Length: 441
Image: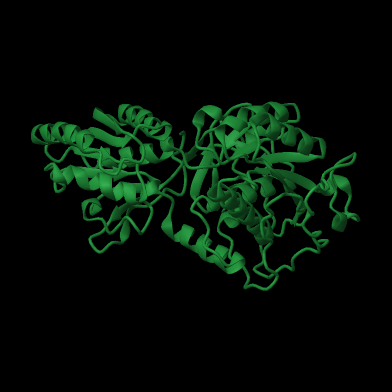
């Protein structure tokens, strides 16, 4: 595995002194990487022996430039990019992966997210020993056109795949640049309208979360669904997903109420919804559920309003998205007994511990998708199987975030667990994530 720093806000490299790292995503990729249903060629992932592999040698990073100077472009020059420490490796044996992330964003949370995603990619490549895979980190903090130009530069330098960007509005422009070369794009956006032209979503989308929780709820006898959420692009995406999913699973959306984003006490909105929910609960006792797609303090505040207006939580089921997967909100009494869809918590906890041991800090939740992206791209690249048929194999791939597969439109279908909030402020798994997709699905 190799990286070359030439970005304004470089991510840290894995430390050379650490315990051997366990492989979750990659060992699963090894088992599933060849699951092409038509019996075609089956790529294999590098074998992980459990032995610690030394960090690759890497030239020291130059001192930070002084004001008025420019940073040399590490990817400049003619011909495919070749790091200096790989000068003795044949150029055709090097698999180059462009990483387009907003490393120098003026939003500190965004730049930290970019660092953590890149860290996770490095960790995944280190774990599988992908010595000939080179990451090409490029700062995607600019406009869609500027980021597309970076993608074109990376492809001109030999990139066989692109990981990133984060923002949905940048994806179509990047996809247009990559389309001619056939290089697939694995983005971290949740915007399902930004896919296509070889662009795929690595992230967990509202469609996947909502469909899983609606499927589980209907199996428990719920037939009536309501939603209380923010009047934002995300809130409306969840509402569309809820309506689509209830139609497939035989349910009915009885009401959707929206409040201004950031409003901690949308009293009037909650009171309107509470009236509808109580009426439905009297007509269909035990068959009503309310989906609340919020997080953090906002979730705790909004959820408490419905029981305040006499919604009986012994009768009405609260539902949530992966945003509920936060120990800070599980102490809220109104959420006890509520359920939400999320990846397997044990796998995520193992990833968190390995990340902390490697980088000395707690990763943001989305970082695990960087690990899955790095694992998948490296596995396919070293086997020269970045073609659409392999990427979209119906049997799917298994990573830190569970089983997933890419659909023809670029979205990802995921198998998720269903978690229930307990009275003691913990959660338990009430329905584990499936380990394989249903035959014929």
